[in-house]
Image (cartoon, rainbow, N blue to C red):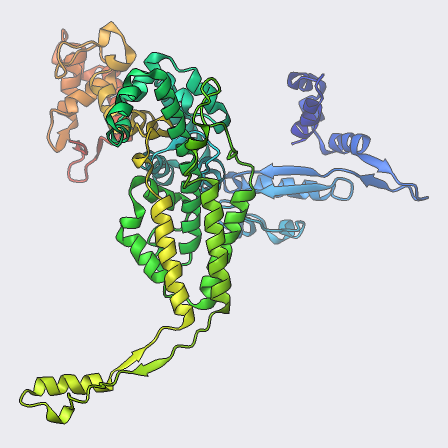
Length: 580
């Protein structure tokens, strides 16, 4: 502790090297007295009072992670030693306790814990940090690179079911980004909005031809007339203009899409059963995979929203407006840009004449929400009741001949009470209808957009092999064919079923155990092992050779450690096979 505190201080000096501290401070000098002298000479000042008190300017913080793994007696002595210097050294101990505070009290007796002023604070779980990283960095329109629904779901499943590592999740996204940009030069269009014009101009004819081969280009092509189709294929400059226009529309779509995802998450976060998920991450996964407005879950969420009280729905709209305002006030690349590349500035006014998405979409939504908020706040919640009376004088109940069924119907109509909706209920119904219309427009899945392959990564099969390992397959390959990894000639076999004495012992034992049934006789297994290792010797010499026995014992122990076999309770000289 003393060496790290003094060494870290010297490390901050650019002229000092870490290795130099080893020579300046010996192990015998690492005492509390040395630490006290170093601290007072560096971080204390004398006060102007007559008593000349020392005023400390910095606190020494000692972090002890994984508290449960430390020796209890060692920590007790450490705390007692430090407590004797607390009057001259301001020291703070930070214990990393993985279980609960009771572990601290169990490790320290009263005479030790009484020396500590214990304050408890907690850190969030890994899932909370993951949601913050994804929502603040990756699930925004300002990032040019985006993940498709299935790719995003794969990475989050790896996080939730394997390691809970936020760093690992970020590294996986980086790998997807590398794989995306490494594909071809057309991915240069996966850039910020300001750089898009230059990127389109720098595309070669081969790059344009690659873009024409994209699957999303065909539906766009089928909507055009014959002349436009011919120009898109034969005129590269015309295709550049069309490409630029569609990519600008894609940027507007991304702006609206992420805004609608966060709005939907805000509106349904308090709905019971969590039909679409609690977090923005879960909502994004569903919205990016399918058309969310056509799913039963979305319709049920809208139905539950239509049951909310006046106070609750006002609070919900207020939260949505806060999100919208922060979204519009944030620094974003949504600026009025040139319509076409600088070298061809024709038809400038036609490019964004009918912009339905983007920043204008967000402003329109804000205006509608503010209008609904004012109407709902001032709406009357009282409903009137009217009785439906039959006014036809010719159809009197008494004059109905014959059928009792008709008489019953007439009596029911005469006593029927119809409830007329209140002003609040009518406004609420209009609000829900507007939400369905707005989300149907802004939450179209990415794969429905033209040229979405440029900005969205969706090649899951290629990345899954590198991100999600297959340990069983790799283990089987390593043990049955070690030459696949070792790349040595001595381990090469004429066929996968053959064995050789040059194989590693664990590989040889693995291949022999695969020929046995559920229970394996260790003596028979040893005989087969020795026959392969030393085929030229007698059986007696092979069986009693201590080197062969030790090699075989070690190979069996390694297979047991890997989970291929376990000891059997039925027979002492047998083991049980666990894999097939």
